[in-house]
Each structure stands twice: as structure tokens, then as C-alpha cells.
Length: 439
Image 1 (cartoon, rainbow, N blue to C red):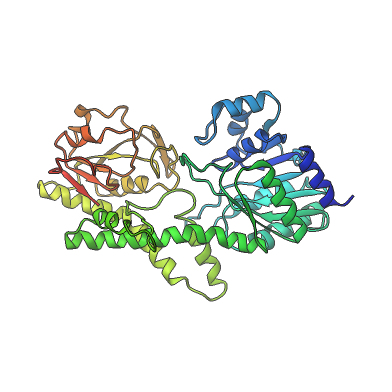
Image 2 (cartoon, helix red, strand yellow; image 1 turned 135 degrees about the vertical axis):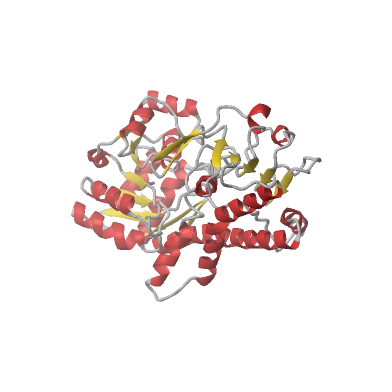
């Protein structure tokens, strides 16, 4: 029996041992889904704290059900380790590690590279490796393949299978989770595509679409997020123009989205956040330069979006000026540190950037976020105020709303008489708007 047949049989029998490298927002939900579908799963992470939490059945990711994790660990279906020698015991391993930008806004693929090197030392014949981390087109074939072959002494396509299947995680989404979001799979060789697709069909409820190569799957993922980046850049630029023209951009968008075809609503905000949308276009632009190509439309949208935190603070300064106050020395309360509503994730959060810009002006900045009681930026920890009360709000010169959390009492906030700069249009339904200004 060949490798393909052996793996397909293991999938059918549910004797395939699963592995996940990286137990963060992508990896832990994936590991839980694998184990829930009857496959013994080992999670790998270099952070011993995460390993200990998983092995204790203690959840730290919002999209994972606490009881599920606890039960899977107790039953022996899921365990975690920082010892990569256990890679030898798994048949399938997904790499779900961060792919951030460095300080020069260049792709930092060190986490992917280091994980691949660690896996290569213990890779065995008949194994499958799938990269899920968002990256530039060509990473799987140009970076992972030679590392895995050199480190293991095995031949890709003959001794092991290698592919790319981009993560599609939307933290806080109440409808689409890891389990029911459709998957895309690209791999090196037709046999690898078939087997990897079969693995995902066995552990997920969503459809699986196969493409002709890892590079197509890598580009597909970047297209998804670049599409959003460009459209958000467009509406952010229009928001700036509409403000100068005295037009409410939010009303414009509400009117435009009544058209049942040819228009999808995107909304302005104080900037872009999360691990994908603010970063992926940089990966593509960086790779494009290798081919002497400049992604002018993408780069323009990135410039617009990157400037929004500064623009937000400029607008805030004008609001204060009407009361004959300057940003320097004013007390500003920022509502929201997370990058989107109703989650605790502040990766690349525009709210954090906005607070940084406020501090640069000399403003005295506090924040409140029911999901993020403290956050770390540039090595410094910042703590939010413990409670949002009328007495607390009245102690500030300006309130700036940067995250649209649904469990914040905005009517109370706006009723305190303090100027409110609403960057997310969460005060839309409040009738008395004398002290409210929208982005």
C-alpha cells in the first residue's frame, strides 16, 4: 500500500494523528475541531504558558468553547507540548504561527521558518505538512519545501506531502467559525491535494475547494484581504472628503447599500486592525517588487488606511479647539482597545495607534474596554479604567469611540455633556446629538 492509500485509510479509520504548530487564534480552534471529530491531536507551541494552559483544560481563545477544551483534554484526545520531537508521532501537522511585519514593514517569516526547521528534524515518511499562516505567494514551495527535505532527508511528493490551506478566522463572528468556514487547499502534486482536502473534509463542516498549486492558494488568501483593504481605503478617503464637504459619510453608505446588486458596504474607521487586513497587502507588495511590479492601487489604499489614526487625532483636536482647548494637556477617554467589536484581540489595533498619537500631542489619555482590561504596546503595559460611570466620563474633556463594543452604554456616555467623537457610528440611534460628531 502506497503513502496515499495508507493516509486515506487512516483518515477513514480516524487513526490519523493530528498536529498543530502554534496554539493561538488560528491554531487552538483548529486543534479543538480536529479532536472533536475523533482524531487524537497534539498541539505544539514554543510558549510554555500556552502549553500548560491547554494541558490544564483552560481556554484563552474567545472562539473556543471552554467545556469542549476541558473535555477533550480529560479524554486524552488533545494535549500540548513544547517538545517538537513528538512531531515523529503525528501524521498531519498544520503550521499556524504569526506572520507579522518587521520594523521596516517587511514580511517577518521567522516564525514560519523556525517552525519548519523544528518540524523537519522529526518528520517521518508518510507525513503531511500544511502551512495555514498567511504569507506571500511562493512561501510553501520556495521556503518550506527545501527546509523540510534537507532537514528530514525525505523527498516531497514521494515521502511526504506538502500544501497550503489559508486560515480564515474572524474572531467574534457568531455565524462562521473554524468548523463551518469553507476551506481552500493547494498542494505540491495531485495526490497531496486529494489527501489534504480529505483531511479537512473529515474535520470541518464547511466545503473544501482545491486549487492547482500552493501559490494559487497563497495568492487567494491575500486577494481576500487586499480586496477589503482597498475598499476600506476608498471609504476612508471618502470619509475625509465628506467631512470637508459637510456630508455624513455614514448616511451616504446606508443609502448606497439599498442597491440590491453591484455594491457591498464597507465602513470608515480610525484605521485597520487584526492580523490579516493591515498586513497582507504588504506581503504582496513586497513580493511584487521581485518581479519589477508596483502594486500602485494597493499601496495607495495602504497609505490612506495607515494615516487614519493620525487623522482621527487631528479631528479630535479640532473638536477640542471649539471649546478653546488644545490637545496638549486635555484629558481624553478612548472607548475601545480591541481591533473590532466584542472581542479581546488588540493585534494591530487602530485604537492602540490612536492612543499613541494622542500621547504624542501631550494629551492625557485613559481608555475603557470591557474585553481588554490592559494591553501592551512597545513593551509598555497600559491599564484601562476599571468602570465606565457618569462620574468617570464627566472627568474628561473628550471621549473618542474607537471600537464598537455592543455592551457599552453609549447613551449614558453621550448624556454626560462631554464632547464625543464617534469613529464607529455607534451613537447613530441617539436623538440628542449636540455633543456628538462622527468620523
